[in-house]
Length: 373
Image (tube, rainbow, N blue to C red; front, side):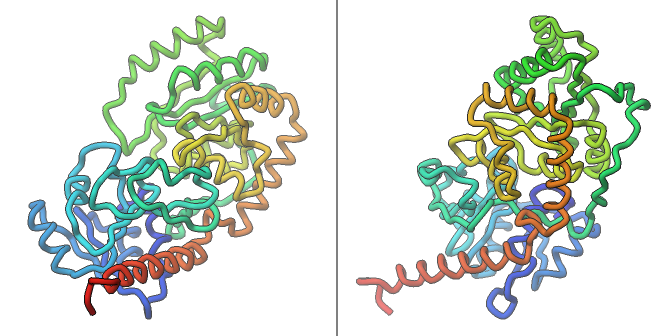
């Protein structure tokens, strides 16, 4: 339960559950102490550190005789210790959620918790799990009070070597999301907005194995192919904290989300910096989650239907400083007004109702015809 994305989106699931109706046990593969872990433990009945041995982990969890286990980790990005653990039947009902950007495909994971705004009409077809939907966006974030102050003051660009009179685009899209189609769209935007800059920070400190040299070579080759001076794109190292990311973004004018695999947590940084975001709609959870967050904030006008519309939207925003200021004002008001993405109390109520519904459905199946009493 370290201060990282998986914790920020899992804490709202249990922090405000009705403790007269739910008994909460947290299981962790490793602990490091710290304020976030302490906060999580305070909102549970117990925190259990699991042993290193996989079979002992399985035995210990099974001995807890759980009705439902909620998997608050990404078990789809790589084959990790948590992935091996989740392959087992650990509780009567096993549920995962948005920590996994795709279906687990695992026989013993029964349910996937998402949101009505975060899934297309045929969303269930993308999952081997049964899809359960919270009303609104699937994402809710709880940073445990570690929240940067929202300010409308933009820092001086001169120390960063950026002229005050140019339009600056920025993106924190992960290295792995910057596919050729996305990079092509970004460079089309730069070509259409004279003297504009693009600031990228694609290296997440929680990931490793980045092929930085190959990425920089591909970027330089693409810039030359579009006849764009290499100095107009700046690639920054990972920021030490997410508060530092927000400060960095306040140098920019417009945030460019990634596609087809769009952002979620990365959009919060841009919203806290009050930047208009250019996003693209999609046809699955991983391609629609960014649009869902914007729609939950009444910012649907910033969602483009396809790549061409995405490029045109970015160019229009670059040309209209007044509209950018208007959007920044709207974003600032929304972020100060307890939006759904930060309403962890409301989120827990919705999640709690779903937990009770799926438990009742499980009990009904167990007591159905031929099951006995």
